[in-house]
Image 1 (cartoon, rainbow, N blue to C red):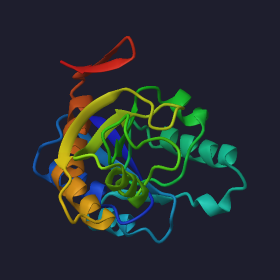
Image 2 (tube, rainbow, N blue to C red):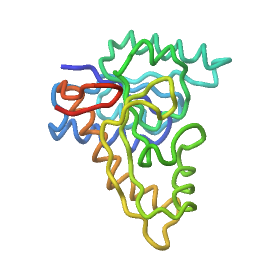
Image 3 (cartoon, one colour):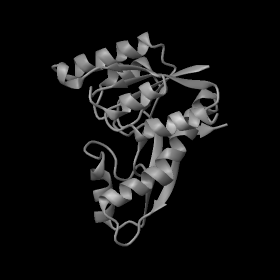
Length: 207
């Protein structure tokens, strides 16, 4: 049984999707053992506690630089014996210390179809604003491995979502979460815990 540690900063809707999937028996060979928040006021912490999941707060504002903060997160993940680290709305960028300590053992859900609308500066509503401004007709979500390159790790799963006339960034964000993120994130977590993902020439494949 693999230990899953989830990193959060805000409301925790993706964390809730993982909790619901776990309760439904849809995450095989893994369980959420700890939720770590960069924000002491994150509602995600309440979601975790209501489901009897251990929590920790490692506040970004208490650290002078990224290096010190990344070390604190890395040390906490090691203490928690994390087999898989899930970034679920975690708003702090971490340096290579963490990626090097957990190579191909960290995954993130991004609210677009990578390589579109990704990388530095593309987070939250900014992603959906960019998609709408570009005029593309499809967007979606991507679950990928986390490396030292922002949004640059191997893609595990993707799901497309249609952009509709009259969409605002807020409306599109909600549809992408409901139709894509909450579906593919738990699936990718289960695939990892079942040892069904393998990397070949920098590309992720599913057994």
